[in-house]
Image 1 (tube, rainbow, N blue to C red):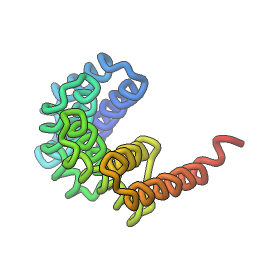
Image 2: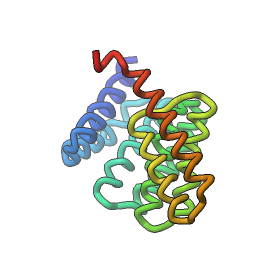
Image 3: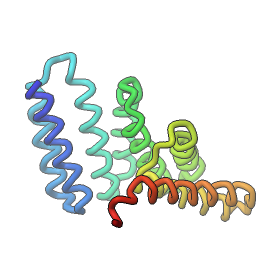
Length: 173
């Protein structure tokens, strides 16, 4: 369906600008996509809105609008989970955790970062971006003087690093 392809490309274009740190252009692309949502079939609209809200929430995080970002992530997450999209589910957990950390809800943040660790254990899935969760987990354990947790997450970080080096070994050839 070319309409779904259009929305997917708009969202991915926004993500490209986001990762290039051109937040204004990322925001512009997301807003353009939201304005065109009327073109979607009613059955496709809720899920596409969820993906756009995930991307919008990431932008809001970069803009320092943490509470609003959390709101968008919590609105987006149920349909992303229902769609069995564990990659974007865990991206949402990362940003939920980062937002909560920024507003000093560190215990809540840690619950989201632990979900990323569970994904790595259960599905052997991790990205360079999700790897950041381990830095928070290690820091939290260190601040609480939880030596066993600190060691566990440090070892997990080493395993994640080795996994990513192996996965992307062709990039260094």
